[in-house]
Length: 77
Image (cartoon, rainbow, N blue to C red):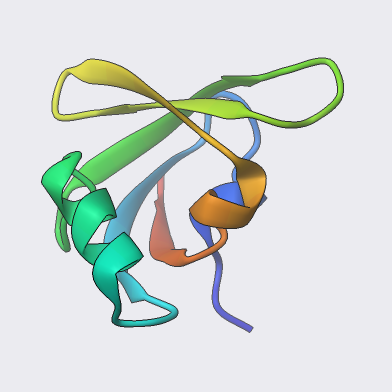
């Protein structure tokens, strides 16, 4: 099973490897900086677990957990 951005715990880092689908929403995620090869770090999540906040390309981005589940990542040490 592939690891997704939604699976990361606060403080974990990953490198984006791909996407679960190829559609207009995936294109929007790429416009926001979630491109293949980019490093991302899970910063925190809301007390209810949704939304989450990640750091990508030097800025913080908030996403719904179901949106983050579309982004495949490889864990970084």
